[in-house]
Amino acid sequence: MKKKARSWVATYARNSIYEVSNGVRTYVVDLTMHSCICRKWDVTDIPCSHGIIAIMKDKRAPESFVHPFFHKETYKTLTFERICVLFLTDFHSDSDSTFLIVTLCSLHHSMSDDQEPLLIIDGSSTDESHFLNPKGREWWVTASLNVFFLLSGQTIAVILCRYYYEEGGNSTWMATLIQTAAFPILLIPYFILPSSQNRSTTSGTPPSIVTVSSVYLALGVVIAGDNMLYSIGLLYLSASTFSLISATQLVFNAIFSFFINSQKFTALVLNSVVVLTLSASLVGVNSDSDSPSGVSKWNYFLGFVSTIAAAALYSLLLSLMQLSFQKILKTETFSMVLEMQIFISLVATCVSVVGLFASGEWKTLEGEMDGFGTGRVAYVMTLVGTALAWQVCSVGVIGLIFVVSSLFSNFISTLSLAITPIAAVIVFHDAMNGVKVIALLLSLWGFSTYIYQNYLDDLKVKIMQTEVNEASNDTNC
Image (cartoon, rainbow, N blue to C red; front, side):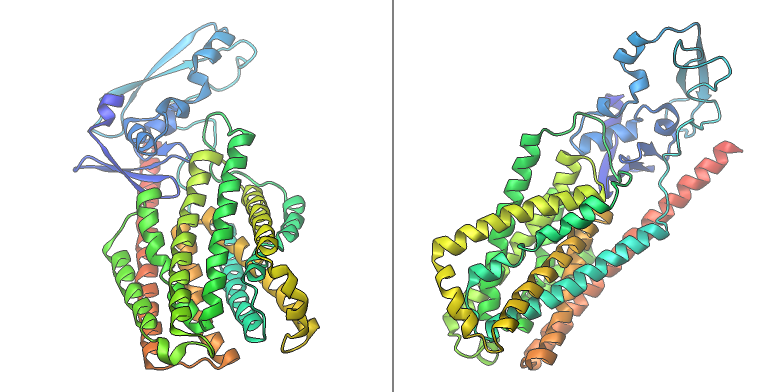
């Protein structure tokens, strides 16, 4: 079967769904649901040739996707009276003319005489259907809620962080710390909300505590470094400029998702990459009229480079998170999403606290509070509000990775960066000259082409789902 599978080519679509083609025919394989539209896998619970090549493309063992019923260990634990051998005509002419289904019709301690066989001849299974289910109301509500969290959280956090600098705050380590310090509030939904059904569970041994801890530790350190770069960028750039430059994270995420998550790099995505790069370049050469008061050209350049680096590191982080869910954790529930956010925020917070004390900036905090432009209470409220806003944003980010994909999560995050310049003009009266207007329009163009690509991807999946349903109806007639 593996030899036959090599005549097919598997291409990653999204969320463990692959397109498998030989140049003549194309099939859709869903590794999460253990399903292929050829229906062999659905009926037999043994991966078909299309499923095998998709599994191998995903760098996993096809044997781990075979139903435990067919394992040698299961066979040894059962006694049976007779074996029913059923020959079933295949559903497609390009495959073998027939394939064999063996059912144990009377299993001691497993099946009584009046029970149905495990697999039945019309292609249905006693288990629930493995076909791709259309996105239901619950999915849309969850996705919309996460989009709201991300958009509102990130916009408010950027505005408040810039407000902190405008009113006299100057501790980059404090600005870094507050981006993750409010993570304990996530313990409330973590313990209250039940662990819902897994979106993706694969066979195999669950990862060890050491492995999971290593993943959380590495991601936490990366987040701490990324937060520091963002803090430096906001220190030397206006909120509107910072947001427009940060939009380049979509460029980096498209690249990282291509190499790490096997996302397609289409013409529309390439258009977004080019347009957003031009937008950031325009902002980069607009330093004379846009830099905050007292910021030298060198500091402006430092802020520009730090923001670009932060965008790249953030994009890498999103792809690594999705890869962690797919390859290491292998189980995606909302409680797992919250658990990851809690532990990596804990690590990032510890790194930030160490940096705050090691740099000596903690000694200046009392004087910073006394000299804050709007008073000590406003100083505390600004830090608390920023910390809460970042956590709301983080829930939205990881929630969208869980519900949709890292690329879509980054798109929504980038969309909020188009909203932030407008908010900055209203709150801080940032200069919105011709160059920044053109950069904003280019960013919106890039966003539009990318969301259109997502629309095309969703439409393609819906067409595939229709084909699956039609194939199912035909075989049941």
